[in-house]
Length: 329
Image (tube, rainbow, N blue to C red; front, side):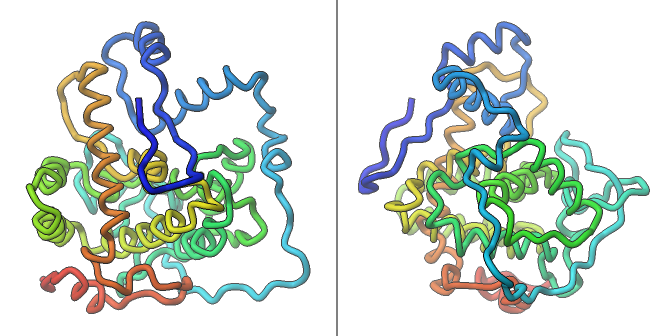
């Protein structure tokens, strides 16, 4: 279904589930099944497990991933304090309004609008800063980063710790686990990081005739993102770009990364029931968009976007706005 990306020797091809498997699942659940990011990942996992044999027990996941604790005392990364919003449970997935708060008594990191999690200075939540910094540092040397699964038990436990606002020693966790948790965070952002209501505008930008026209239009669309979304988008693209530039060790080129991460960043908001072919076509467009953003992030957001960064190296709102020409409102 997908071809090997040119110019990326050693990269492993990440495939979407086969049409045969998709057809079986659609036939079981009915034609109105939504092909979400989680559904695609589940189908990929099911098909891979069917080829490899018995599936590991989730409790064995960390050992299967070659988990090794950090040796000796490590200096903790300096991070900005986390203004955790105690706003409630994950919001509705039905195309919520960006910035709309969830209701309820429980503190949460996952499923909350970014505007509710970010500080007044626009700084990202501390756990997200640290996840990005560790993945920037260790992701390029981790084979199959963002593609390989992690222990389901460890995944749930870490998300619970982060949701409760407790301290988590992320440095000692398996890198694949951190990548999976970051994808979960992206998937659970109400209206997604790239904002579902902007889907058509993103696609129109990608259809521009020339490379420069695409870049210019993508800058305009990025400028219309909620203020809290832009710093996270820039950081995420910096991490993905850094990993793709080290494809010899990560085995993950731009195309692979876009396939694994893209559906968690944007999904078309529609009330219509889509056919399997339509769902696949839209998913392919999102993948193409994210691949283009990764490859051209420097041209869109500035040359310094992919410089090495630490969690404390947060851009001020003025810097963030100037990087895309955004005017302060």
